[in-house]
Length: 354
Ligand SMILES: [Zn+2]
Image 1 (spheres, rainbow, N blue to C red):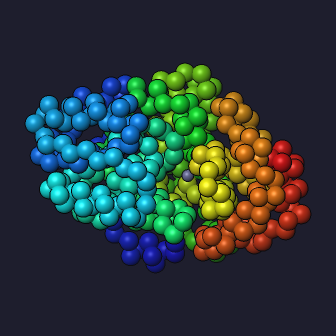
Image 2 (image 1 turned 60 degrees about the vertical axis):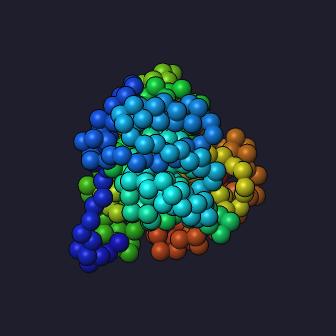
């Protein structure tokens, strides 16, 4: 973003309340009261997440005298968002609460934004840093694209629920935050080469969240409750950096472009955070930085550090890297000046990714 565009921007959208504690559900009604969220609420959830957490949230909201209508989100697509908005209309919905994973949160974030009602986010997994950001990842023309949406007014981090989710999700969220390290290097590179404005505040915040994950890696690997707490806080901090910048720039560089390139090629693959974490090793190698630190951290966490562990064929990975920059040419990264296949293979081999 150029500095003149920065001066044109007048809005920084952030969540109003973030409630992080072991048992955060009982306080949802009181927090909704504080935010003036009353009466008719649409609770968006998934089949499994309804049983795990959605039902409890429905109960506390009903006990507070609110009318709760439950909608089971099937997919995060534009078509599903149309159905959700119909549901909002039919139930005279005044605000929406999303209880679930990325699919449910993304669908609710976008649908509530389009329908112009406030939105409360209750994630059941801590798997990526879109938790509090103002963008939504939806499947449009066969592949995922990022759409403008809104930040949640309230984010509920119920550590008990998050700590009981499969550890793979928490580790993936942690890896997503760690990848900020290379996203920031790409941003700094762009600042030097293209003159793109860099926000010291947003980049510092993104970097602090990555460093805090590296510092807490052993605890995250061993202690489910402490781990969920650390990762949730890291994801929120990373989300904040994106909110302040008004784009994903502080937390998304070449490692994310490669992940998107892989996501477009394959139907079922590794989790987002697993992909960007491993690709951060590759990017850090090209930047000439300490890629071994990222790799060692991911190993402690039990996150994938090779194409085989990610379930990707070497050739697919190489092709995904070579075409990654074309997904978003305007986002300057270490790949923008062009990398040869020979250089990619060398980097992947030296880092043990293939
Ligand atoms: Zn990410």
